[in-house]
Image (cartoon, rainbow over all chains, first blue to last red; front, side, top):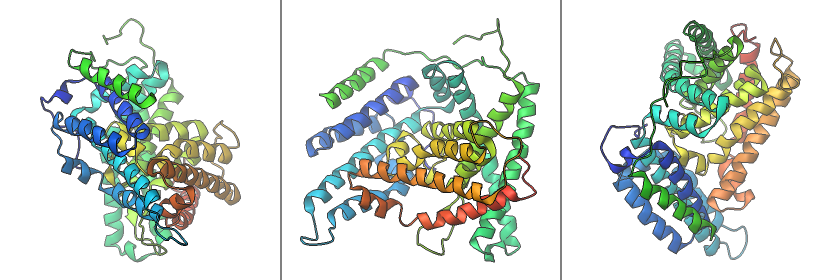
Length: 235
Length: 193
């Protein structure tokens, strides 16, 4: 993970998280609606502005999502290949290449969100956007997952280290998977039990205090831009 | 939002326990995304993510299994590095492998419903092998159906080609994960009730 929240004073840092979420969705809708050379050229410009206004370099964003590149390359190659004459279908390959490129643009915008939005704000945005108990459940749950992810990762790392110190890595695949997951799961479950007890002891309630979220003047152009992108996608 | 002190509504005991378990299983699924083993059958390594989906459905039942996987998706979308290869963000949900991710809550729900014979959670997790295998097979079909359709939409490919690019190399490994999940559920160390 190379991209996570970093404090800063860029334009994107000052925006409300709800505005940024809305913009991401609008951008993706526009990219899927206008997968043409012209449309993607325009959206590349938009993505460039987004990266520049959030202090993320394109390289960082690409490294973050390196995992999807095999699929993005396989798409056009497989689409272009045909099992009979004429063997290579340029048009299908080109269409799929445009589709792959639009994914890269969507990933850029998503990287900008990750860099400029703290978890607390995202959680508050979820609770503002999803009404009622469902939203509170999602909001608190997201906080818990963030809290426990590094703990469980460390658990699994220790289990794997201990297992390989005892030549566990020479056993069969199923045995190894079982070993890691039985110990990992039993630790996770006992952590869950202790955590539930701790929550009850601290009066875990449906009405927590959230960080204040408010729209500012900086949000206006971004909201207008999101609406514009959506309109462009529909027309 | 201001602090609300007038009417504090406590979360019920059972719900608190279920929320804690759902969150922990979501986190475990995220941690499993980092654990990969060399695959004897294909060059693509096996990661344990899908095992997390199986276990969430089997241990938490349909409703809370589904909630757990929804938490996993939302947490990843807002920035926790829980998706394959430690990636995160809304972009991962809209990328070529996004279809697989969207399927997780549905698959966990289906697995839970089949294993527990309905949406209500049974007191003890059923251990019959045919039922567990059947449930996980249905879950796997759901995951790959969403995954292949998602990939064909995102990359503009035909369904057959999306299957070749995104599913064919990974499906055999699912059998290993099912075997491991059965071993986990039937193991004496796991006492989820």
